[in-house]
Length: 168
Image (tube, rainbow, N blue to C red; front, side, top):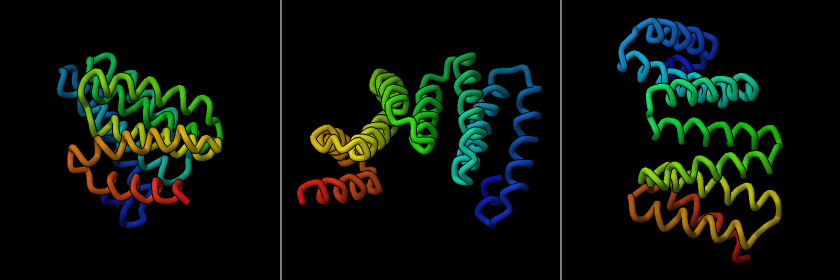
């Protein structure tokens, strides 16, 4: 599915992942539900990259629901943080910050440092949009610390770039 998307075949990618979700959801075992969560995440990311905000939000909520049924806490946090990204794109910054806070708390609780760093970075970007430079800086610095600790190079670079801009 995501390979088709990278080749520019967005509708095919959506169709194939939707079929995979339907197949996986028919499996009654735990593995089938885990695959469903995985495929829903892929579908949501494709919808997000194609700026289909409403569809992406719906899929990420479905991902969260199935992840909750199977007690996949890490996937719950990721689905919530993805919902926050959609809300940000839709311009609902207060709701996005609130939603990020929920995902951030879960990530922190379970020790998912990558998701925590991403959530902090995203929250920092929203603080910039709201012209709250001090809050943005704090979140970016915290994200940078985690990114450095876990070796997330992209996160280190993104946080450095924004922190450099904030110093100007």
